[in-house]
Length: 524
Image (cartoon, rainbow, N blue to C red; front, side, top):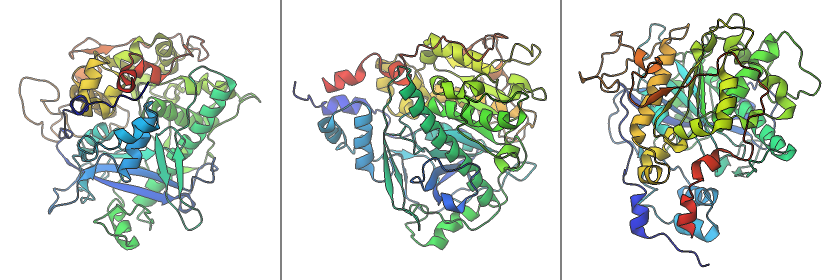
């Protein structure tokens, strides 16, 4: 059957929102793109793929009010047409469909992020004179920009958020720049079946090796940037069209001595879907490799190993906050890593605070995915041997879809509403942001973030709560249904055994997202 190209009227309805809404925190948000050669960093683990010679990420941060007319921050970075075409192929379109899809700049190319390029970092408003830090790992089909709204929203409340690009084949396309010792490289999407098999587990293991290594490199980069060391930023888009290395590095120098990356347990680790799995794999790998009382069996093949004296091993503790959005469990179920899967979250170590530092936010679609839900409950709940630990925070926003926790829900509300029955995409992200912020306020370290506004708290009295006024957002983590459409999920209490077989291994996130056939309609 010949390809039926979607009409312009149909495509225009996909994006009724030409740009993102403004962030709701009290701070302006700056952003800078960073790419650093891995050879410049003190990697805590061996490189799993020597051809991935750099680590790339975007930083969102509180900034001063910018002056002048900086260039807009495009949601789709350069090279835009190639990236849009790669997304079309990822979504299931054939080569012809992908090429046609890439020729609609009015829909995609000019979308901008409401952040200011390379704006001056705002002086930290915390008692430590350092901004708290979040590292956010993207899911399948994602990248450094795909979660820009939640990352920017956190930054607008006084956090520095690092969003890495993963070059593991989970993105439609990724680009690795050339270094002094390596050539430029393109990393294409690697498709795996959702039917569990030795080949699928091996492929996901390979991806997790790269992903966790990249998070380790991002952590090493943050330490170097905070120390004020010279860092060669390879990204030429980092400042005012300048290609001078000194100009590019000046942007990063403003972060020196301003990041809360040295106090153990103060970095928050977060992610969505495969990124949530990556976050769990990293934190458990680092913590339990040095704190487990039992030795792993010979069959265990660790995907990430850091020495006990490494900086990341000192940073990840039982008190490290973890925020998991639509946690996808299957990648962690590999037989090669079953020993680690059987371990509880680090917060349930004898000295830990339990589930008080663990937040899981599901979409309603993932809540209804019963197999993955049961494994999520097992993975996040306290072990049966420790009945007095607090349960984790686990919720879902009603009428939300898997895409609702990314930028796609805001940019394409017509799709998420018609196909996935998702409502209020902007509010869904605000609920996610509120929960993460309150989690940090209630951690043992009481991380200092800006107050949630009365408007965001959906209180009758409008206006922004002044920073430092002590107005938290306790309702968002309560279990009594005090927030409209915010549903608490029991974490399956003390039934944790870590090795359940309830996963519907024929289903994956892509099936949950697309099972109603929207893309089939577009390609028919």
